[in-house]
Image 1 (tube, helix red, strand yellow):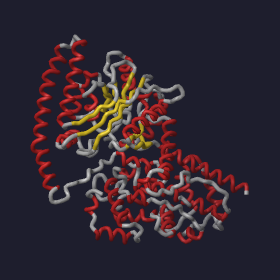
Image 2 (cartoon, rainbow over the protein chains, first blue to last red):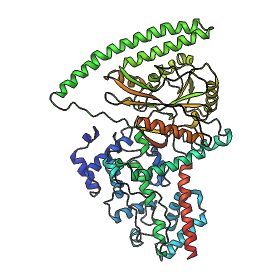
Image 3 (cartoon, one colour):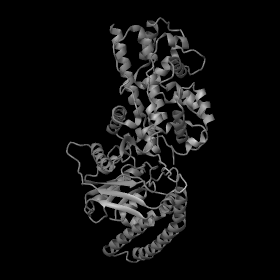
Image 4 (spheres, each protein chain N blue to C red):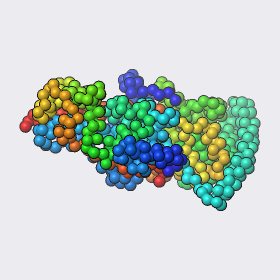
Length: 181
Length: 411
């Protein structure tokens, strides 16, 4: 796997594992670290938003700005911690809590109707009018028994029975980021 | 390396100058092709590519199925497919992999291999490198000593001057190749000098040009470089009929396109060599070809180049090394081994667009050499992807939402 794994000691790996609630295996952490170092081209210890945006698949994602706000400037431990929500072994609560953080851009512990509309706006761009977005969100809230002015809490997210899609990326991480065949 | 977001510029230049002379702007159909390819790639990888492991990502995240009304909020709030896509791009993406220099596995592990490696190191740096350097310098002296007088004194008489200059450049490239002890095997029929033909090849390093030039003097289209390489470009290579472009100049493209056309149509210009990838890729992958070379209304002869990594990785990672360092790395290795295949000339078919033609030729080259194709434009190394790609995703999402809205209103 090259030289980078020698820069991570066993202690470091276990530290990161604990921080991520053991959602990653040790091999996955080593592979993720290699990837972190590859993205952090200037070796500053964190990945800047420019470096994230140089990955075209990430740059074309409609939610890239929101994720950038959550991921830029983090050191490797925090970076792994944030990404642990995507691990197949993460619990539903962890996944929902991540989704909640993406919506709760003002970080006040509540997701209002406007917050939901803002995310919908990111996802749909100019292809939906404001009225259509309002209609969708209001309708969905009312059908689940919430009024227009209610704010959602993380418990509400659980109650609503969101089923986040599980993305199995084990293959990508273990491969060490695509080394030569 | 200027990081300019092309997005706005692209949309403006489209309306101002029109499409016919643009070498480097993706057109609508190119973008469609990219998008289709990305989705193909994601679903392809799910089935075929063992390297990516078990990918259970659905190709279309927007399957609209009838649902219970109280699930409406859940489906509105569920942004996990988009987030998962972004997370997977952060963890690994096919574009960055194209430019990764894979380190060669060290073999000096044990008690007798290590001294052997040390001896090899001493031989390479202490004996081979100086010998090669001397050879290269001698070659340069002979070359310049003959080229400059010929170039300036026989200025009038082109018929004698040009063949001599061509022969001299071929000699110099031979010296270069010898200076890294290059072992190059050429397969297929030698290129012939004819009008209305263009050569395209995959690109790994600037030495691609030297390897090919050794056999036939091509006129190449290259990015203008700074430093001693640039000096070489303007003096020696100019006489071969080489064409320069500057990636950062947007007006340059029209001028260059016109120069290309003129060159191809003239009978006594050297055969034109184009690297349609537009940038150096690591010889494991092949990025999208720019359609400029395929719109010139002439035969396209593909050339496939594969470097054997056995002694050294010939990929020039222009972000990590300067060309001089890259040359030194090559000169202190045992040998540079590579294979060159001259493939059958292709012409555009009646029902093919230039982009489809480019893809067909890319298929030929990638299959010959055994490298993987990715649906990304090599220029994404320097620029951000166009906003249009994001808008495509947004449009798909919006359509699904509208469908759901209409569906639930019916209930």
